[in-house]
Length: 235
Image 1 (cartoon, rainbow, N blue to C red):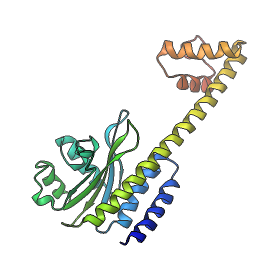
Image 2 (image 1 turned 180 degrees about the horizontal axis):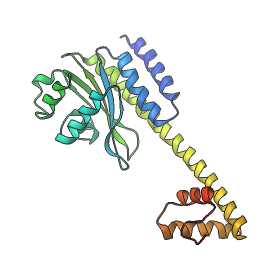
Image 3 (image 1 turned 60 degrees about the vertical axis):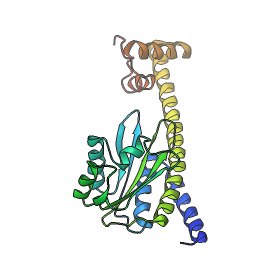
Image 4 (image 1 turned 90 degrees about the vertical axis):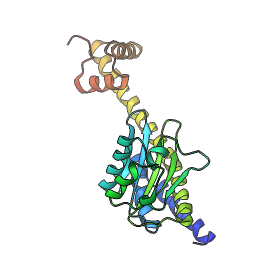
C-alpha cells in the first residue's frame, strides 16, 4: 500500500465510521472493516472496560472471539486483557503475536487460543473517553499473518474508531438528555393537573420522590407519565 493509497483508505474509513450514529453501530462496523481491509484477518472483536459492564466483549465477528475474551478474563492474562486494562505501555499501544504456538508472554492463555483455532493475533489499545477504554483485537487462523503493513492499517482503524466512538457517545448522551427532559416535563404536567400544583411544586415533588425512593429522577418521571402516580405517594 502506497502512502497515497493509505490516505485514500483513511478517508474512506473516516467517512464510513462517521456515518454510524449509535455507539454499538460504530463498534460493530469497526470489526467488519477489519475483516474487510486487513489481509489474513479471520476474526475481530472489541473488549471494553467501563463502570457499568466491567470488562466485556462489546463487538465480535464470531463466538470464538467471545470465548477468547472470556478465557482471558478467567485466566487474568492475554493480549486483549492486558491492553484493555492498560497494561500495555502507552507508548506502544500495539501488541502482536506472530505465532501463538511459541508465545511465552501469556503461558496460560496461548494454548486456549490455539484450541479455538487462532494462530496469530494483532491488537491495539482503544481509548475514547476517560472512563471507557479497551482494545481492538484481530485474529488469524494462520501463523505470521500480521506484518508491519497490517499493524499500520490496524492502528489507523483503531484511531478513527476512537474518534467515532467518542462522537457517537456524545450524541447518545445528548439524545438521552433530551428524552429525559421531555419525560420530566410530561410528568410535571400530569402532577400539575392532578394535584393542582405549580410547575415549581411539581418539580419539587418529583425530586422528593426520587430522594425518598432512591430512584433516579428520570425513572420517577417515567413512572408518573406511565401511571399518573407519584412513587411513594398514596393513590
